[in-house]
Structures are given as C-alpha cells and as structure tokens.
Length: 303
Image (cartoon, one colour):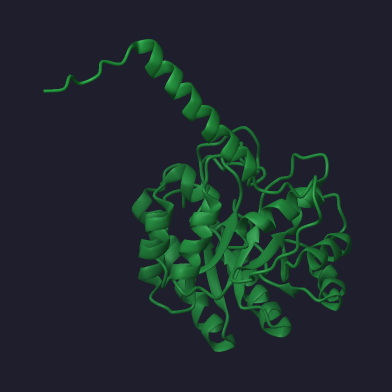
C-alpha cells in the first residue's frame, strides 16, 4: 500500500501564497474601468431608466447638471425648482418626480399640518399632470410627543385617502418615502424622529389607503440602514413600488467600493420585477469631480 504523502506546514503556506498571488493578478487583470481614468462612460444598456436628484449636486445649476446627465445617458431629473423644469426639458430630460410641497418634517402624522399637506399635494398633483410626470412625493412627517403610533398611522392614512382620489382622477401616483432615523451625522443623511422609519410599516399604511395610485418610494440607502434584506423586499413589494432612490451606505456618498450595497445585483433584481419607472441617483458627491462620480454611478447601475 502506498503511503499518503505528508505535506509540511511550510509547503502548505508556500502553495497558498502562490494561489493567492495568481488570484490577485487575475483580479487586477479584470479590474472594472474607472471613469476618472478611462474614456468617459455612457449608458449603454438602458434597462434601468436613470434619473438624478438635483439637490445632491448643489450649487451646480440645474441646467448645467442636466447637460451632464444628457451626455452620460441619464433620462430624467428631479429635486430641482419648478422654475428650471422648462430648461431641463428642452435639453431632453424628463421630470421623474414632483414635490408634494410639504417636506419630510411637516407630514400628516401631525394633524396640525393637515391643511398645508393637502394643499401641497394637490398642487403637486396638478403640476405633475401638467408636465406629464407620473409621481408626486409624500412623507409621513415627524413623530409628535404624546401621539401614539396607532394615532400617527391613522392621521396619515386618513389624509392620504382624502387626496388620493384626486390623484386617481389626474392619473398621478402619490409615492411615500421611507427614511432612516439611525444616521444623525448630517441633516440629509438621516432623519431622527421620522415616523415612517420602517419600510414594512410604510407598506402597511399604503395598503390601508387602498388605492392603486398610492405607492412606495423605495430608497435603497434608507432601506439598507433600517431594514436590510433589500433584494427580497424589492421582490416582495414590487407591485407597490412606484420609484427608487440610490446612495452608498454608510455616508450617502458614491456607489463605489467604499460602501456596502451591491448595486449591480440590486439593479438586476429591479429589472427582474418588470419595473418600468425611474431609479434616481441620490448620493452626495465626495469625489473632487462630482460629474465623474455621477458617471461612475451610472456605470454601476447600467446592468
């Protein structure tokens, strides 16, 4: 009977080192192109209709940002003043989302905001219908001291029910955005005190409104922070999702390898659901060249 060779620890380590070196060289050989170093990337596949959230790129003027978007291949823009709509549409971009006029702080959770929220949403619905945009954003607002979760939910659902009929008539969706309450480092990276912090609870409220025109704005960044299990939830809530936002986590920055979210896999999951709406890039640029950062995000999401 032949003897089974006994390998020394030294030989095992040496073999592992050779394997690691070979693996490393292979990875280096297939390194993804960096748009800061190579020919400028342009969207090729287009299975994801990419948009941009304008506020993230301030103080860049909306018209300048729109020109860069058009050159990269993005098809829409949002989060800009309505005064700029005409100029960016002339450049060739759609408006992917219209403001509901009440902001994330002053939502229907607090009944003191009822009149202002109804008026803001009604104006948003009218503007969206006028310019051919499908979605108007809404929020729950902040938790109010002395108001139970049950009462806060009731306040929200009651108000949205009072407005959604008008949205149906105008063929517009109200899209409710879930926001994270964990990040307290920056006023736009997290929103401590926000009532709609649990995406599953937001879905429950949407279902209680009971209208096909009440949808979820699925912000991947916020869902990752508060709930996780992003791809499963995309499939689970596919019939209720009316819009998407992106950003890297942690930090709400670029979609690069300094953050934890696997955006190519998530974009493929979105495509698999048959979703035909917009995915808006909503990260805050940290690179020296914000346009290169946008180009990189477009590349990552062009699956």
